[in-house]
Structure formats: structure tokens, C-alpha cells
Length: 255
Image (tube, rainbow, N blue to C red; front, side, top):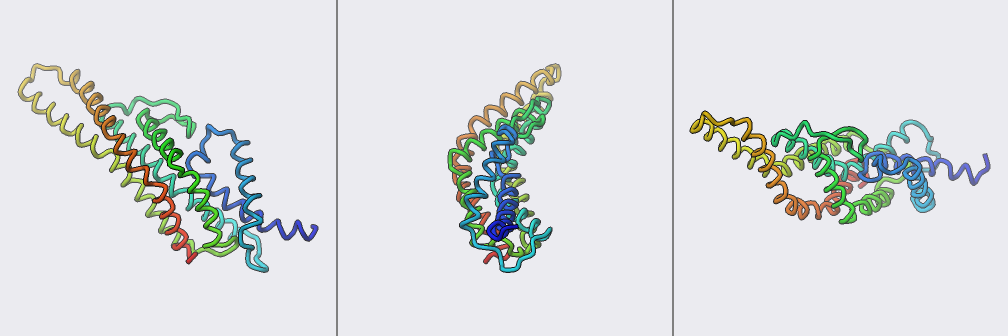
């Protein structure tokens, strides 16, 4: 192998695995609505642009499975900072669908290619548009570039510390989903209470015929009122994503 090509092969491969890990999980970049050739081309473009400017790997580093896993892990950790937000919104949609009686209303999700609830899709697309509008996709690319200053290619990361940070990100997923769904759950619960009182006072009324439209209407009404507040909350997430990425770099021993 020619010397210039040999000198570039290991850095190129290490950058490729880190960028590829990000592209596997990051919102929008991992969307199935984007053709595979486009995603592959964008990934290779980032790799070609980053390889000449990132710090070189340690002298004499042996390219192998350990380095591949470490670089993939770094990319996955960066992308999950934004992915948990999108997944939290979709989780909120699933919770709301159960609470409002819309759990049976499913259709093909263009982002994942599988069937999901309509409310889950609505909140997922709403959150994805907010991420794009606030420049979160650019924050992810910036975090990827900054990661090479904290953890250069070929540096052995503290995988245990990184795994603990990823676990905390998944906890953030559930807390985000519950925060989003909490107002609607409360409103629907009040509706259930009102229906229970009505059933006791008017036993001859067909409560099943009353309950379904009341649940759905009340849930959608409160959802419409909550969405502007959620937009304000999510508008600050680009900074939060950068903070999550920074903590992840520290957790893997990047300093």
C-alpha cells in the first residue's frame, strides 16, 4: 500500500465509524424518508471533510475491534442526546393515545417505516420540525467536531462511564415523555371522574357512548393548548443537547 494512502487509511476509518454511529441514531439523519444513497453520501462527505482536520490517532495505534467499538460508541452517544427528545415526544403520544382511546388508530410512520399511533407520529413530527427550526441538527454536527478535541480518534474511551451516561439519557427519555403527557393525563382523569359521578347520578345514560367522544375531544383540546408551551420548552433543547454531549465527553474520560 502506498505510504500516503496507508497514512490516511486508519484516520479515515476511525472518523467513518464515529460519524456512522451518529448517523445511525440522530434524528433526521437516520430517517428512512431520506434515501440510503443520500445518507451514505452525506456521511462520506463529513468523513472526507473531517479526516484532514481532526487530531491524528496515537502513533502506532493498532486498528482493531476495540477501536471500532470505541468510535461507534462515541457517535452513538452524541446522537442519542437529540434522539431521546424525539423518542420522549413519541412516548408521550403513545401514553396520550391510551388515555384518550386512540390507541387503535395507527398508520405507517414515515420516519421509521413501521406502524405507530397517530398521536405518536404527530408529536414526533412536531418535535422533529422544532429541532430543525432551532438548529439542533447543526448542534449535533458541531458536537461531533468538538468531540475530536475531547476524545481524539483512536483514544480508548472509558466505556463504563459512557454507558452510565447513556442510561441517564434513557431516564431523560421517560421523564420528557411524562412531562409532555402530564397535563393531558390530568385533564382526561378529571373527565373520568366527571363520568363516574354522572354514571352514579344518571344510571340510565349510556356512558360508553358518552365516554369515547368526551375522552377524545378533551384530550385533543388540551393537547392543542399544550403544544405552544411544549414548543417553548423544546426551543431551548439545542443548548441542552450540547450540554448532554459535553457531559458524555467527560464521562468517557475526555477531560
